[in-house]
Image (cartoon, rainbow, N blue to C red; front, side, top):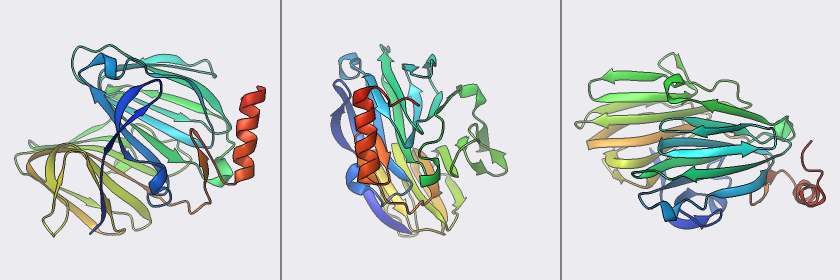
Length: 275
């Protein structure tokens, strides 16, 4: 059953990157443990080439999933690399990391997503970690000639996702359905579960309501989800167990109390942020 529908809104972030914000600060708590989802992309390099220069994170994880194009990463742990078509970068900020994400010019429509995931209180100050997952490391399940699912994290039909060593239990699927076929998912009743349609459109429950491109649908917990494509649909299906922790959040830092948040920014200013 559908609980809420959101439509992505245009925003400008980083050094001037034009993107669509699916949800963010104003929905905090409603999609716990998820904090933010951005859908970025454009055929115009001037919309994204400014990128996201050096900035800090603490107390959360960022998940960057590229559909098309390339992004160059560098961070205070010494990690450097480029994620390309179909690749995923899963970064646990934990006690603190400083990084930059700079898109590279792409001959086509550069497109991808960044998801922010909250960390539970006990893991807020865990050691930072960086994972670079290439497209060929992500399991692909072929349901039939009309449906396939990439399992980025979690477990679907006894197939484990490419990312398993997480502090919290997250399911992250990329689902593609053609020719008005259907897809079924049995929801964990403890999960917050949502789908974000990035291409096409589909019916997501028994009401036959059509969810269109750039719309997110949040589900009531514990239901069997049946998705029927209206000709074709591509969507992210993401779920995770709610943390129910207090949130003190400003910009790229997410803590539990205002005091912890103040300390994080003070440490960033005085050069003691990285532990």
